[in-house]
Length: 209
Image (tube, rainbow, N blue to C red; front, side, top):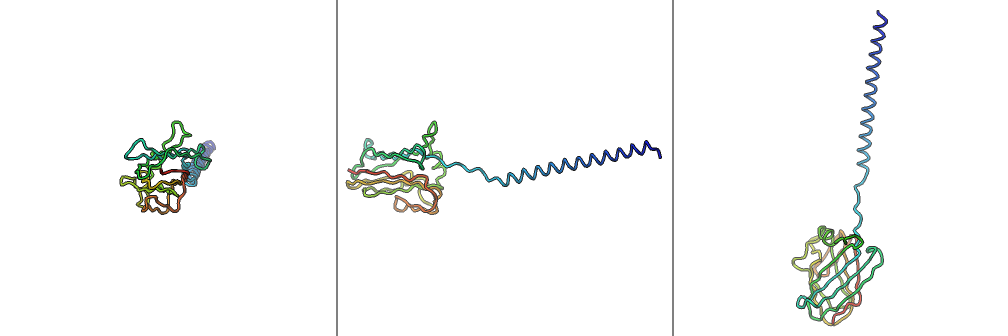
């Protein structure tokens, strides 16, 4: 046999083997990269949205028979609800009068201020519930028929009507519960169990005169 032909044939076979081996390793490396990438994606949990910061909470009560009769309960917590806060009460309830409540809940640390109530709470009404409480003050409340539907068949508690009774002085409390286990709005003020509190604020020295 011709030695040159044998060498050429051997070189072709070796080249073919090297090419197959190289292609095998490239394919194996690609598969390994793909598996690692998929595994990494599966292992990483979805990003968690940070808790919304609430710095300002304002309750504005307006006498539905006299628009100049207004009571404002305001709370300012510059670092959010986990930090220190300052509460103020402006005006007095008039005995026998009926008031409509308007809520404002914002994050003033943003510029412009973030409207937490309308941008976050109301769009997720099925996950939030406002409850109220009074102590030593003659105030009653109902959730309006056009109040927004909240969790568990309850009303959210953003559209409410308040009635001032006899002269008295006490406190008014507002609580916002996120993802409550159960809710009950049968007495107007409302109660919730489970979940977590996005805010819990008490206003002292509120007067009915």
